[in-house]
Length: 366
Image 1 (cartoon, rainbow, N blue to C red):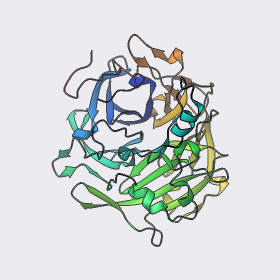
Image 2 (cartoon, one colour):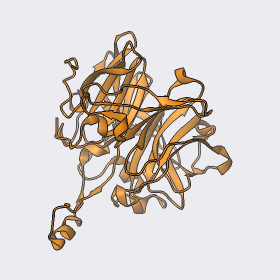
Image 3 (cartoon, rainbow, N blue to C red):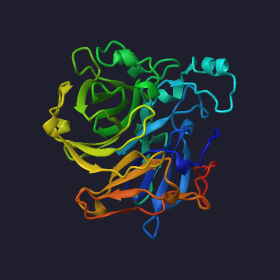
């Protein structure tokens, strides 16, 4: 596996649940991590799955995917990369101002970031699922990947609202996919950027299998292969999404490299919107305001958690605060939020021996 700067549990970027399993992703790797429920109700027994074993990646196993969304639906694990560009940062120890300026001229393309696809989930024991390349008549499939441009960026290039932002790096209000929700052949992508006059953007696609290992989006809005929904999020970008019946829950927070508060919003009857447009503000409700700390606890992942009560949600964080982590055991805690206000608590141990060198998929964690 490629080198990562921090242990996996400090860079969590996405979460989804199926059966007794939590699948998580780190935005610096090209892999997914599986945890299973333990007897004490926590999650551990970490297993690592390199996605290069399951799909074909243009930059291979060491190329960063910047996975920002996971969704377990219809027997598949859906995965989306950020589809974003990245401007180089000046090094903190670089005393040469001109050299630092030249570094910031460079905009990097990471081909693996353009991934949008799915891999089958095989049930190896009751409630215990493993991602595989194929399972009976089901196979891994994904959108065509390019070296310099994704299919999504190509479609959005001529969009009057989004086209100007496709070639802008993500941390500068450029294109940045972070939310993912799936139902049947319908896929919603939530954008952290761009944010347009305080409105976040959700793209709505109808997916079809084009050929073996290949997915394609149908034309659903004239010649466009996506519907475009704009929601007034008070200037916040979408960090994750999850379907809740006919509604779409949105985890929203600061866009670009900003620090600030985050919320969970509910978009009422989202599944019935079959045309592009601006969503009426009355259909967007605030479910919860999340605790805010400067420089730590950046909300990145959202999942339903019904056993904690009606409307309960699991929230995972990037850059978790020190009190969430145990550096000796590589464990981390996540919030379970009850919108009724009756309870705010912790899920318990989420990561078991993740570290910077995760085990192979056929090994047991320590």
